[in-house]
Image 1 (cartoon, helix red, strand yellow):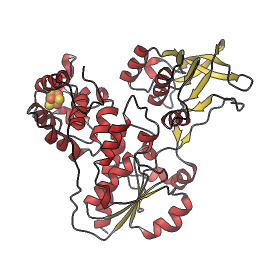
Image 2 (cartoon, helix red, strand yellow):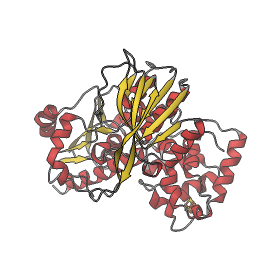
Image 3 (cartoon, helix red, strand yellow):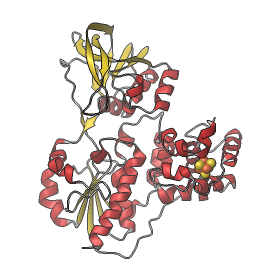
Image 4 (tube, rainbow, N blue to C red):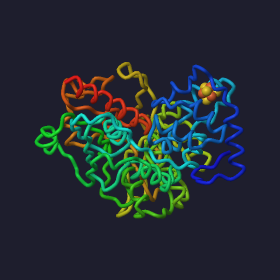
Length: 425
Ligand code: SF4
């Protein structure tokens, strides 16, 4: 199988890639394209790989997705394009993501924005993650002046801050960001746009505003954490690993949650030396929202999973030492359609633990979340416009946390809507 993160392919990898590309049927209707949120011309880039035109393949990918390399690493392709590949009926779909990674790693490419005639209209983009960046680059291409505000001192949002190195190597991320034509956008790093700044200044100075600030507030837990040491939120945990503040773990690490981020934390704990890494989820495997391939890999690596448990107590003196769970059962819910969990009376489980990570998801930042407030109900799901206002939204801030490629697709869609809004007056 192809290795990831290798800029210069070995002969073995090259042969694998060429053989995989030659399996593609180059379908005329290409259902795989429909499965890709940004509609990359998949048969075309695979055809170019087959002809060994790796630069051409990368160009084809980048026309549709300026973060094609990052998505080659992070997309749950088995649930997107590969799921729709006609060969999936045979049980062996084309490994589209691996081919995409290969083309992007192999070729160098500078994506210069071809801008339409200037409109002299100004758009503010708030948030420098995948949604904000894709929106800003598209808008510039449409000829608008773009200012991008990002609260951190770097771009790429949670991809840079939290997604572990084993999923996307840092040098790949740097290479992709370095290939973007950012000179044509005014980028303001280290500027946090709060509600005050947004309403008092930005809204008066710009013709349209895109909000793609992501989710920055970890969902709270009902559990009393008692200020015990070695109890983290997932963001804090992953961020501390990325910046080197946590570089090894000892003993047992328990992660609470069932999403992709929870799985990342559990896999990371093993890599940092934890003797056991246990994922605890309150529903069953079937309801777990994490990508199936990620869960499978986690199990293969040695992560243990406890299904249908919910924590109710942490114990310890200064550091966390034990955690107690109640067993749960699932009951139908007429309201949500998703099964609710209920604690089973008397069914308890106590485990010793050295590190606890809560990966319960994230909410919108208070300030801008409140700004959106009731307006959320007025968002047009097609255009991403907030009511009839000059505000547009996209990415995790809007959808509550989906994939990177979906955030990019949102940014592109919002840019087209903003362009229409500006030009139609
Ligand atoms: Fe190739 Fe599969 Fe797409 Fe057909 S559906 S073009 S076989 S990747």
